[in-house]
Length: 205
Ligand SMILES: [Zn+2]
Ligand SMILES: [Zn+2]
Image 1: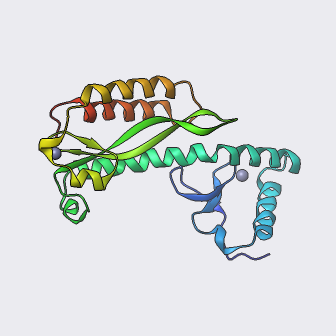
Image 2: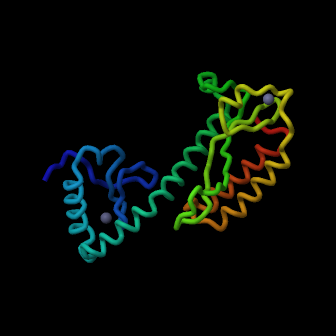
Image 3: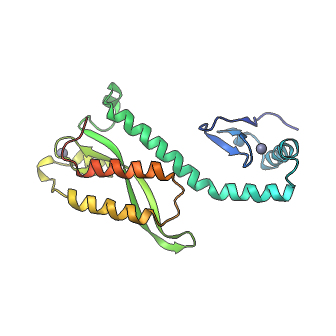
């Protein structure tokens, strides 16, 4: 059997191509591309035989399928973490800001929205999105598109804070009723901070 890719213990936060649904063993990110599907299946089966002998091949297959279905939710969780880190970094207003496409006159934050799917599928009519948005430090205008944010003129910005706050409250209610896979605490924090960015007249930094 070829051993040019790794299956090993992964740290909880470590990005991975695959994780065993029953233990902490998995394949680190970018390693899966190195082998064929058949080889991967073989290595995975060997792992089951060694580590989870009490689980039949068929039962393990069911667990694998369930885990694969959860994957979009996992990705969403990763995205929330990533966005939070991104926001924290920008919030500190380090020298790295200077290298960013947006001038230091903006603060980045995560703007959660619940949008209607074009085609209502099995997974429901609504879909939660977490977009990166920017708030002008001078006029407090908020945009989801960097280009529009950069192009705006503070004097022309119409105050839409109350409408935005209403939108966030509605989205929050809807989000509670849909399948999104995000940790409730992380989501609550994302909504709280979005509400602050979208409504408060002044904000640090
Ligand atoms: Zn395992
Ligand atoms: Zn402005």
